[in-house]
Length: 428
Image (cartoon, rainbow, N blue to C red; front, side, top):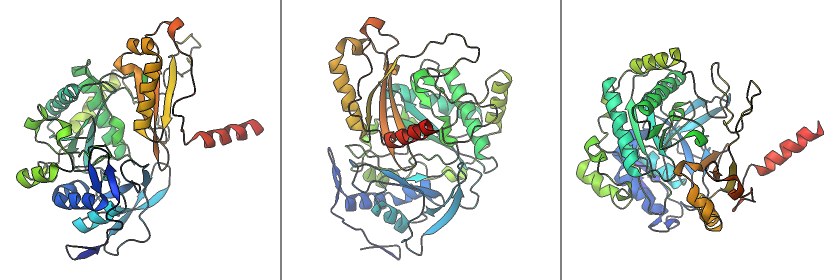
């Protein structure tokens, strides 16, 4: 039992291993880490509804998303009721203090996933999130260069970006904004920003939603759609080295290495430097210039871009079908991308191991692949995610292209539902 700021928080199974690969950490170690950086972690989640991403079997186990606040929760823990694009509603937890932070970590929340809104106004975000997501094989140097281009553009528009490592291979740049615009408007601004950065550094950055069209670093504008969350500052990521999504000062970006920021190193950094994002709330800006940029894009013929699949179709939105699968409206012959599925797995590392086996099995083909020919997709269901890996054989001569084989591994959690849907349609 921990006594934290006047509240009692029980840590169940404190010795349970939560990281057992490169770094050895128990659940209690994880709780203690979060308490050591609590002021910084709370800056990212305080007064915000939070999705509970629970790793009840530790970082190597399967995670699931829990939107609804547990019924058996402390009476001092707040909740708010959110509505989602699907029409459903859920009462979500709001964490305001270190005791609440320790309580959700005890539930298995290795990562922290707050919504970009405050509890007083759930329909108007106060944060625009720039998520820099590098494709397979894209270097960290390219991620940093794109981040610095984002900084430059934001400053020209009168906005301040606050950088942090994603805790994986990418980087996040968060922008505190005034609570005047809807989710749709903030996403529109984020799309305009993504396209502007792509125009500035076309060899490094992309705003294309479909992975088969991407190269380099993807600026994921859809992270600003309602109901989407990303890991917040000081979140621990479920990687073997227990890496942390760490707030940075801009001068650090050019030389930083994300592997330097882990559960074992960040507490000392926090004790010595404090939180680089401590003053973020004092610097809320306007997205009006970004919306003006979006309007100019639209006049030039650049309309909306695809939304995530579970959102209702909006007016002016293009097709949500990947280009390689789309049917031509004019019935002209359309080149279909030669994609093969290599692996489906609840465990990303197992899927990547399957890709390695495929490369060994087809060495001549593997040598012909470009970096952006390997598509690593995080597939999201209602409460869990899994990894799908596909390969685009467009650069491989037809006579050398291997046929579609049974993926290795082949663990698609939606298969049973898909088969049920197919059989239901067949009976009609």
